[in-house]
Amino acid sequence: WDSPIAGKVHFQSKYEKLFCEFLDTRGLNWRKNKERFPYISPFDGKQHNYIPDFIVYTSSGEKIYIEVKGMVRKADPAKFEAFPKGEILVLLGYKELKNLGLDVKDPTEYFRNPDGTEKKLDPSKWPYKLLQSMPDFQERGELTEELKKKVDPKPFYSLLCQS
Image 1 (spheres, rainbow, N blue to C red):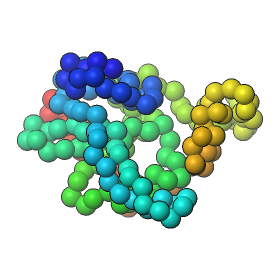
Image 2: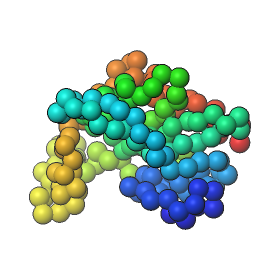
Image 3: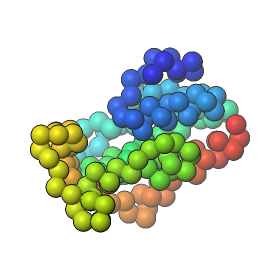
């Protein structure tokens, strides 16, 4: 994405691309985040680095870190829990992005048939190959009430009301 505000931005999903467009349309001061935050992986017990997707700056220069996700995966709670106190982290999932008016699809539709039963994914097709490469393939994470508060989108929504 070639942003007039953030410059050339490499995004990792359609959700992220649409969010980049949204930020530019709103004229918000933003950047693709490169800062790393250590956390302990629930898979191997080792330290890894968490890199939230974006930084949006308030008019006073305060940073709001934004994580754009279709769904919470198993390692995500550990990342969010380890995020430094005093920093603002906002999680924008499918529902929040939809509420912002973005044309996103429910990521769980890939796992459901129209009748609501579980869909068997074809191993030769997308998204099976992509999902299989992830350590938390088909394993969803659960956020505690405390973590939901920590990643609440309210700071971002407040910023939108000011712009």
